[in-house]
Length: 212
Ligand code: URA
Image (cartoon, rainbow, N blue to C red; front, side):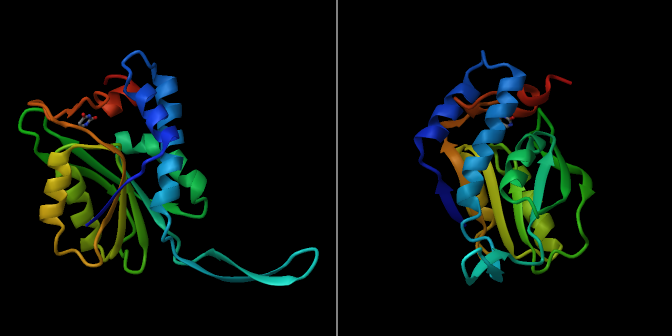
């Protein structure tokens, strides 16, 4: 697995406000969206392109455009939805699939409860978005799921990660070829006993959408 922590003062600035417990939901949503767009810039560095002939007002030239098949963005429900707009803004031709995963708050076990994905992902570049890489169980399960559908080119984009989650991914995805790419805004200190990232930002889903 290749891990990129995007080191940029604008990301650090926005993450600070995102972490602050005084930040309200509308501001949190806006910041999450802006952050994803900045992370998506890095995450799409190797997005597939193809040559594209055009004419400028001055002369013919050959540029590039995003290749087909279109990239697929997969937000992990529910918190991943808060990252979708920012990703689509940078990849407007991408298609979107959904994967619903939930974590048992006591056992921290993860299970899938919904899936809306194409049956065949071979040849598709997939971008999984989920704000918090905590234990890493959700992301491993999501990646396994996409690999099972034929995906071979997978990038995961997270706002924050815990070292424990990154280690879990490294251990479970060592054999995935080509390696999965993980793009993060920051790596925090640790997980606490409840599985929250420390210092983190709390429950991303609750902060995006309110407690349900
Ligand atoms: N999920 C969250 O929303 N926050 C954490 O800190 C860990 C998992």
